[in-house]
Image (cartoon, rainbow, N blue to C red):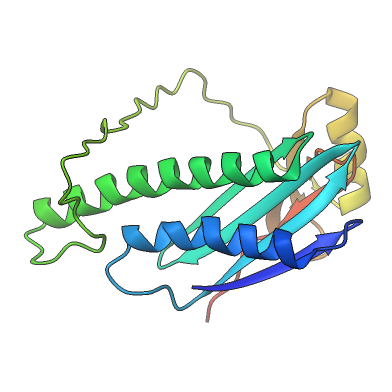
Amino acid sequence: MIISIRGEHLEVTEALRDYVEKKLNRLDRYFEAPLTSDVQVKLSVVKDLQAIEVAIPLTGVLLRAEERNSDMYASIDLVVDKLERQIRKHKTRTNRKIREEGGKRDLFKMETSPVTFVEEEEDFELVRNKRFDLKPMDVEEAILQMNLVGHSFFVFSNMDTDSVNVVYKRNDGKYGLIEPAIYK
């Protein structure tokens, strides 16, 4: 596992780097083969809280977790626990799908120890379906519309790219834009 660690408004000390690498390397036990993609880690201080964001790109899925705490080491522990839960959930779904399709091999290591995990199965209940017209607008107008309706995100037709985009309000008070990737 190749771990790329960067600090934002925070100096990444050698002790902090070692602790992050030690904790994240524990996740290797869940995979058949070593991860070939770079694991991105961002350590920062946000509103007097120590924050960590981790992104692990896998084939067909991106595992991402974020935690904030008054102590950076506690944040690291919490984010690794969150990632372990995500991996177990993804592992369960992936291996079940492979078995149903008659696959010969699991993508993830099967547990051989007497430790048993409770299978985390969620019921996704759709409680509302909304349909609306997408008015072509630029990003600034979409942000204004989002703030007008008081939502944390807004779906719109981007007049500059002729595609459906989403603007959203980030935890730091700034805004983000989600655009579809065009594959050719």
